[in-house]
Amino acid sequence: MDRRQRIFGNGIGVDHRRMKPSYAIALALLLFSNSSLAGGIPDGDRRSGYSFMGPDTRAMQDDDTSNPGMLFVLDGEALWNTKLGAGGKACSDCHGDAKESMKGVAARYPAFDKTLGRPVTLEQRINLERTKHQQAPALAYESHELLALSAFIANQSRGMPVTAGDDPELKPFVEQGRALFMQREGQLNLACTNCHNDNFDRHLAGSPITQGQPIGYPEYRLEWQTLGSLERRLRSCITGVRAKAPDFGAPELVALELYLMSRAHGMKMETPAVRP
Amino acid sequence: MPKLTSTRRDLLKLAGGAAVAGAVPILTLRPLEATPSTLNTAIRNVVGEAQVQTGKVKIDIPPLVENGNTVPMTVSVTSPMTETDHVKSIHVFNEKNPLPNIGNFYIGAYAGRAQIATRIRLADSQKVVAIARMSDDSFWSASADVIVTLAACTEEVY
Amino acid sequence: MASTLINVPPKAKRGDIIEIKTLTSHIMETGFRRTAAGDLIPRNIITSFTCRYNGNEIFRADFFPAISANPYVSFFTIAKESGKFEFEWTGDNGFSATASASITVA
Image (cartoon, rainbow over all chains, first blue to last red):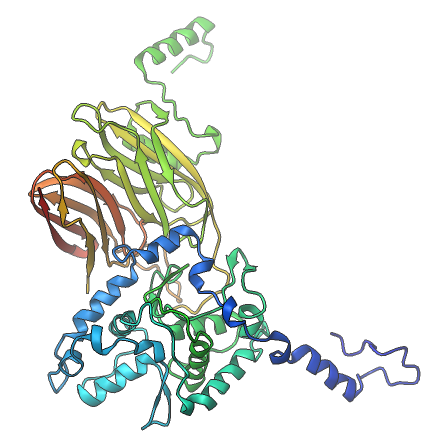
């Protein structure tokens, strides 16, 4: 809105070059405060991205033998059982059968790490374990191996409700994530909430806008023609509004991921999901 | 090649001869003029000079795809699938991708059902054509129009 | 790591028409994409897929760049006898992958 326009009456005798500070503040609050106007989605109205897809893409996700994400889960299973690192240990040596030990784990990530004093994502946890207990080098973000392992582990939580954010120690980080979700950014000056709380089920250039529930990650995205993490998706979205995306593993991304998972609290995990 | 000053009789002789020889190709895509030439050439490479009739073939493909990178497609052909009457192969083509061919699928009598499914890439809204070759070397075809939209947001290139 | 997913019914009655679904991991690089610098990324695709049933070829496919990444193919065959299905994918740069699945036909 052009600041030179007068919004309150004729204002004769008022300096028209600038808006009165009090009016400016009132206007700014009205236009730029998102949290009060946007509001979250009521629990009962929450929908997975699955429900926004057409029947063909849904069929791709439903059948484990035609879901390309399952190829990564298979690779992850092989990695889980591979002895490596200076210790020559496999994940299975300590954690046994992932079907038992990893059940529900991904559903409560990002989780609080006591040593670091902050939340870590599942991918970061995998790397922490690798470096500490397997004496193996950390896997690069978005590498095939890291995606395969996190897909395999998250697949063990498929069908289970999300419990991320329950830990009281996570509260300040959830709040940080929520603030980021509500914060407008980039040249397009958009906040996550503008699309994913306020305008889901409408369309953006032919594609349906979903609620942004991250319950299927790492997911096989047709656009990527491969499996990718939530952080990749977030960085893509942030780049999409023409803002500078934080690096993989940055605290802002972890906080945002934590908030998003806690926003999806109770929804059933779908990893590996298939999305357009 | 008819003489420039050919008589009507010459033309009728030519047309008659061509029709009898079965050498006049009838490619029943609608409309014929709009079909790009590379698509036609690719089809010719498979069917040669034979007549391609419409029918027997069904293409199942979403009319509006969610992402052009991965479009699920099923092609089925009505056929008794016996030793003497079956589908030998199914050939799929497209109109606007850089290349006209998508895939060739060779099945035969022991398939039981002449149906294949795969996932294809479509670069733009366009027509997909499937041609089935029968055991008697006759060709049947179907086509489907597909709308492809681009993803809404640009992404970082990895 | 080239993994494959095969779906063949483990058991069938003689004469049943069964569906075979296959999914293999491969980037299927079309040869038309460019890097950020503008250079063409060379084509790297699976070009041929074959399925043999107890040694007899029952299905074959030619793939072109228009087949999606991580190619999925499903086809049908008549369950004739117990035995093995063998699948082979070959492609550019000497790519070769195989898989197999058994079936009991009563």
